[in-house]
Length: 104
Image (cartoon, rainbow, N blue to C red; front, top):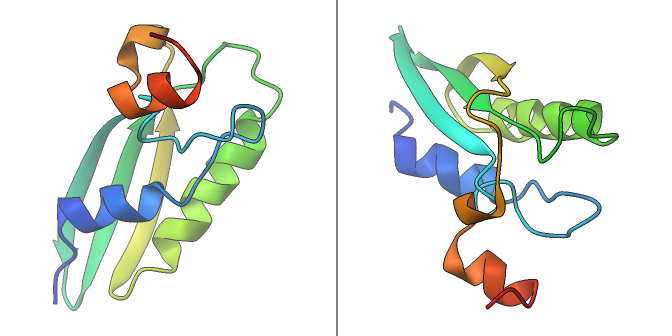
């Protein structure tokens, strides 16, 4: 069965920024998801950013995103790309994330 976009976003919520302890989806770090059927599998592409260009946790976040997506049933190739444009800002966070961080 093909993987749905909603499934990818739910899986990505397992990946937490180690410093802020908020998941990458609610932080607004995920800019987009691409799905491509590949026979019985679904190839997954993710465009994401970091909270800062020199984020010390960048390599760990990328590895965690890849690992979570590769673990999905029917996942084929997983490609994660990082962009810094547009730059991340706190306005990209969900209301729940802002509340958790005490940003009213």
